[in-house]
Image (cartoon, rainbow, N blue to C red):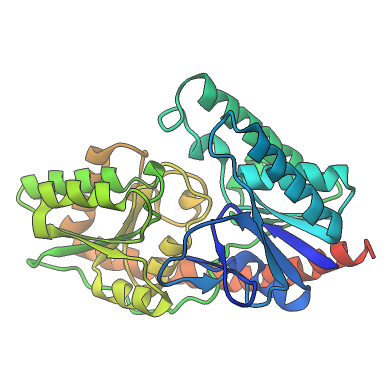
Length: 381
């Protein structure tokens, strides 16, 4: 018997022990997996370097057949039947939302009357904005996933939101739901406020998946191009990998030359080193829940500029925020930061305090979430 079937949007593959491995751990569920046996349910993926077990303790990994086209009815049925089977053998379901996998898990859990736990990590109305998914098909998928997430949050016994308020306002919990606000940053390494770079080159770091355009890496490169055209020596490092990497790298080399570096996937130790090497952190996403990398960068002592999306306004000062998909606004915000060394130091010191306080509060909320989720699953026995 599977105690909890954890449905994630992250692609993963099965190792020699039958466990799911991927590019990042499901940190929001890591502590729960130490208390309740979990099986990861995900889409399959090719093996990759730098992979990690998705959960510290797993009793297995169920791979969902994935339709290769919208007309692939046979694979769609296999996908639904596989989800139905896994949920039937589970004592409870944990679904990441938003996403197709999470939406199916929610529906099947309700139909099979299994306890439902939800981890709310983003807003589908932002992540699937018309700029990324235009036309009727985009409108349909946006509507379906937003309604599925609304249903999931209303019907869940336990919800973990990664924001303090932003996602809760868009997707409120049901009257009988136990809701917790806890980002999934885990432990952060608190550093010292990073000094302003002065006359030397400004080393900008971003951390983003390169699987989708909505992480805003192209817009960030445009902002750096604009700054360099005005005589500012700005160097950009991009940590992360994904299917768009080669395309972005070709464009970056053409327009920025050696002023841009693509670092690929970094493990925790390498990422800590990247934070220490940088002068400031910039996040240009079109959509976010509450970005872990931004919290880690803040804790390390970096001042930051980011787009005004999701829970990001809960983290940064208003004058460090810009609208998404506006490279000129992003360039101007970075320039303002660089031009004021006193404000640079103030922002860096403030960011450390905010990140550490957030992480401490999240640790307390996580303990409550794990206890509530374990009770919810246990009540079905």
